[in-house]
Amino acid sequence: MLKLPAGAALCMERLNSRGYGCWVVGGAVRDDLMGRRIGDVDLATTALPRQTGRLLSDYRQINCGRRHGTVAVIIDGEKVEITTRRSDGEYSDGRHPDSVQFVTDMRRDCARRDFTVNALCWHPDWGLKDFFGGKKDIENRIIRCINDPCRRFEEDRLRILRRLRFCSVLGFSMEADTAAAAVRKAGLLKNISAERIYTELLKMLAGDNIRQVLLDFPQVLGRIIPEILPMVGFDQRNIHHIYDVWHHTAVAVANTPPIPLLRLAALLHDTGKPDTFTIDEKGVGHFYSHGEKSLEHCRRIMERLKAPGDDTRLVCRLVKYHDTYIEPSEKAVRRRLNKHGEEALRLLMLLKRADNKAQNTKDFDRTREYDRLDGIIDSVISQKQCFDMKNLAVNGNDLLKAGYEKSPRLGAALRRLLDMVIDGEVENSYQRLMARAEKLNKK
Image (tube, rainbow, N blue to C red):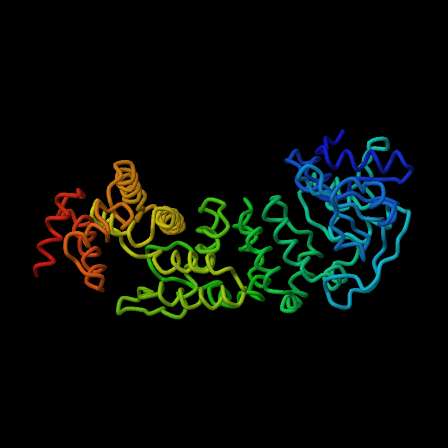
């Protein structure tokens, strides 16, 4: 018995009680069979959109999908999508059907869906219906297209990335024909909007099975991020490394917590390595200044994906500084906190740890060094040590009262006082700082 959220259960009961057959279909059924928490619930019914809208007229509705038979209802903040059973026409734009035909047959409605695991449906009276072997594929942990996989991907090109996302999030492998079709049709991704690709990419990166997906399908991801392709199979020729650049990247991504932007930074952190590779006289490989080159790639990639500005700034910051040394001292940590802020510095430390775990940790493990650094960060934060202007014991008004004029010198003096506090030259107290400020003003 599938336990539905209250809003979805209400919609289903109201439609079924009026004689409009209503089934739960798609991801909610799949997740319930897998013992996962149910997310969004999609309902399929014989009711036409105007009939659905009329039966649920006492709730707010979003009508943007009615052309394709979908009515979205908002009940107590919960969104429920109810779609009239349909068969799709041609997909000339590679994303949406040009036309739909409303049908009563549940099998025909399920036949238009992407993967077998998403074509399961359930009714409170008639139980589970599985027309295409989705239940068995769940048991075998396989993603398989319904019918011809090439045609499925041509209909909706975004399905190529959705397939990778499902493998990553669900921990499934790819059925052979479906995998081959995705690689063969990966070029279709160039016609998908950057915003949709970016959304799917972040969801995919957050999955528990991301390492295997990256290792299995660089050719597909290379269609949207061509900068990764030179990394595949690139021998680092250095005793610090046990993987090629792409394998190292996949392991690093998998070793970061499933924070999408952090994992995106891990994905891009070494894109500059093939461009900066040199070999010394002993035959050892080096990648001097690869962080800067990776930053160049990162900026270009984020711009191409039309990522939000805040996302771009954070990911670029992490990529730029992932390989920089941080001295394990309170002074150095205060400097880094001033430069990055606490949130970004903690993410940077997580990236450094993941980078380390993807190297030769048998001989060159830096875990203890990073443990010490994290301990110092915790200590500085818990002691509320000053590392930014907002926590400085004096401000601009204090300096104005002490005789400073409104000029660039005022800001420079505050910056100098903050530097003194960060470096441990002066205590962060009003009296001590004002005394130093007076000396600075006399100079």
